[in-house]
Image (cartoon, rainbow, N blue to C red; front, side):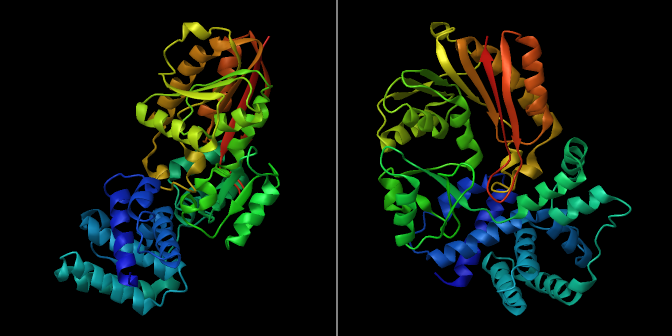
Amino acid sequence: MTDHDVRNLALSILIDVLEKGSFSHIAIQKELNSKTDLSERDKKFAMYLIRGTIQRKLTLDHVIGQFSKTPLKKMKPVIRTILRMSVFQILYMDSVPDRAVCSEAVRLTKRRGLTGLSGFVNGVLRSVIRGREDIRWPDGSVDPMEYLSIRYSMPKWLVEKWNAAYGEAKCEEMLIAFLTERAITIRPNPDKTDADRLQELLEKEGLTCKRLSDPSYAIAISDMTDLLSLSAFQEGLFYIQDAASMHVAEFAAAKEGNLVIDVCGAPGGKSIQIAQMLHGSGTVITRDLSEKKVALIRENIRKMDLHNMRAEVWDARTKDTAHIKKADVVIADLPCSGLGVTGRKAEIRYRITQDDIDALAALQREILNVVSEYVKPGGVLIYSTCTVVPEENEENVSRFSVTHPEFRIIIQKQYFPSDETDGFFIAKWERK
């Protein structure tokens, strides 16, 4: 596949995500990782271009707006996307010559049947190249939140929210982390291997592996785009999972013979980890809302060869009277805004609203009220989200603790995005 074809593929994915509302991880898996004629080098280039363009969208739009007489909102979606991905290459991809960016953008414009606009595209890009040193940025001394918003391509209202909740230093630290290229973390299947042997095996296959500090068995892989194609994955030697979410099983501390219910478990990573920690004993019931999601759990159960775990279709808002006060551990990793993983799924930041956050926080409280009834005396309830906003995390923990005095809070921890983990939150209660 030629460089031009790779760019055209990236353009199609970007249009799907930025103009049609697709999720980047789904579009990439469908359109990029499924291509058998793409080399690993081409995949890496396309992935970097796609993710970078999405991550930097607000910054790119700010720059384009200074060099185009036509407002972005009045441009054709294809032209708007070509300009965004091209300006990203000019500003953030030193390996791509400016002249190549311009010529490829013109070719893409013509290939998409918009020959009459190729001159416009070429003119805007050449203006950006000539004037890149004179780009005007918001004045941080006048409006620091606007400056952070444009510099790190994060909607201003979210910058203001994080600044109010965690302070400006932590807020900027998060914004930097969300733009940092992220490795994929994996967890070895303890029934088949350990971290040392798995790392040795993967390094023999040419992968660059880094052991994380916490948990120490987690391995970060930074130089391969499609781990699903590895024979080690097909053989069930490891599971792809963010390092912070691995702590759910650690905090749950399930004991052999326990009954564990994971109420919103797809695709099953946390409950699979718990099932493996039980060494074949006990029962882990993992549920989710749709047959499609439960099918993913069942496939992962099969791949990991687990016999003490089963998957069921169940709406977590519906009370299961058969399990009232029966479970030793209940895992409630609930639907959330996902803002903790916006480093991997950058489009989330542009789509979420405060109304969405409020609605999700209410849904989380509704589910917690139902599933907490499954916890038996002395048992534990684990609540987790992959987000970093107080409404869905600390505030929900406080509300639940007040309305459910039969539970005592053991621990709550907010993981902030870093080079080793996504943003994640975990709380643990024990029924008295």
